Length: 420
Image (cartoon, rainbow, N blue to C red; front, side, top):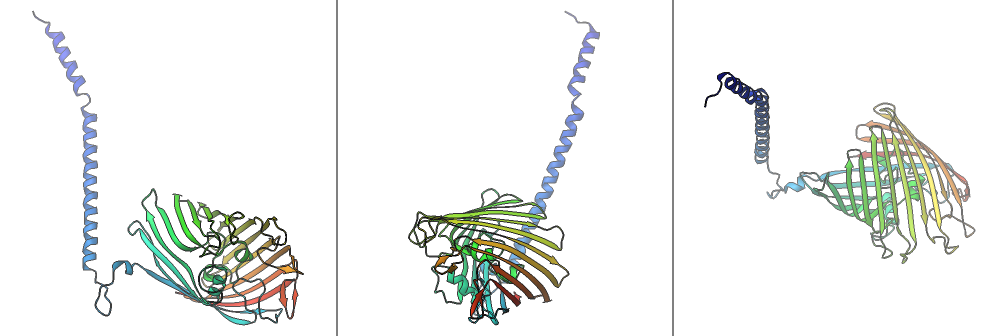
């Protein structure tokens, strides 16, 4: 049987055309794949060289030894040492006979010098390369006495030594990293901190002193959900407690966001029993801090606190106590060596439970506001000085004035800080 030659030739030509029509695309894909493999080999070689260089540097690095010739462990060399020294002089225009500034937190001495603090901080930070660390903050001076006086369980209330923080820390490889602290640490709440050097003003706000706690002892976890969003959750003994005064535990939480480079928002809360031998009546706290930096030199902050405690008014069994306040801050960096800060705030202690102010053995529904202006000068790179004026005004005569009391109080303060 024979076939026509022309149809057969045409069929073969068509078949070869179809078979090889995809060659250019296949060739392009092969070339691209070869290029990617070549790039990966180059990156792998670079990585191997870096690792080799790091190992060589580590081998060549001189060993750190003690005077007796013993090598110091590498983890010790990773520990950071820092701290500061803080002292002040406060002049009270009311010249109180007892030489005490009424209702102040740390600047308590009127018309006299105060050695506030010598703080020494030892810290081994955690990172992906070193996932276990610790921190201790040891304070000496009159500020330590104040913090210790409100903290149950460490020393006496007159000690001028306080272990402000002492915790172990671990960074677990969970998602972006789960940070866990165990021990004693400062609170998540408020727009200010215990260390004066890290605040905009010398004197602490009313909210810092009376609306929120200073420290907690327990467990705290934090996790970064996004580069701009962090979350915190913890279980602890409660407000300023090392040895708990009941068998209940308090819960803390915080959500902190930086939606833009110029904006910061924190919403935090705390809930749990705080009264001695009482696990039933809880104390609740809501703390909100908003920060905004419209320019490189100008910074603004707003802080709001609301607190409530069940069955806390001793004169009225079964009555809940509550308090709330708001504080506004502004700071302007005029130049490298001078900055001006202002703070205005209002605080209402409806049942006198936070300020413990009493008039004729009755609970005082205290309303209190203050205005503070602080000039900060950096005379040297490592020396900070502040000159501050503060006016306090209250609904009752709660401020010492001579040998009596008054509704207002004015102070002028000079502070010197040396950070290291």
